[in-house]
Length: 189
Image (cartoon, rainbow, N blue to C red; front, side, top):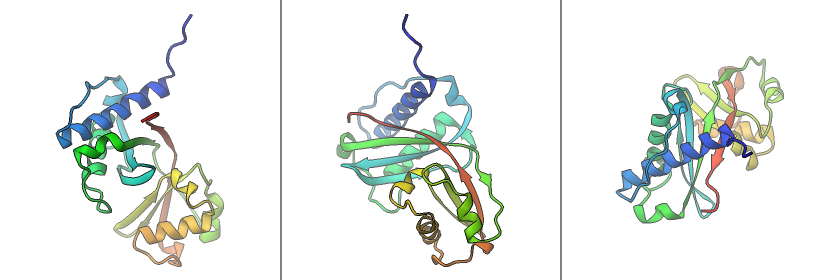
């Protein structure tokens, strides 16, 4: 007797299809019909990462679940393709060369820490995403960034820089929260 599909894999397939369709529609390209899933109506926070030939081509997301998951992934996909300030907007002819990854974020958990060593001791490399807050500024690294920055002190210093702070900025003047992700990426594209 066949087993039912893994719900996590089924949700991932739906989110990836939503992301690709939203980008295609925004760029005026042919768009496949959208699969549906009741989970798309629940609030959720996603990041959509685009890679072209293995290189980052855009990444935009939400840190808090503030809108339905289906809307969130579509909006972030379009933003990653057209509004990531690090890249020119994606062109329709490039879409076939782009691989999409969707990360579904857990609710952020604020961390209490006395100093930088204490904060670093609480981080779980390759598992935790991290958000730093400095007044009105914030910056985040998804857990996937540990692949490029596996040493916790370098990870933290690079995240401070991403937030416009010097790497030696004292963590006593920051707030931090960690989160986890469930992620899916397109296969065989």
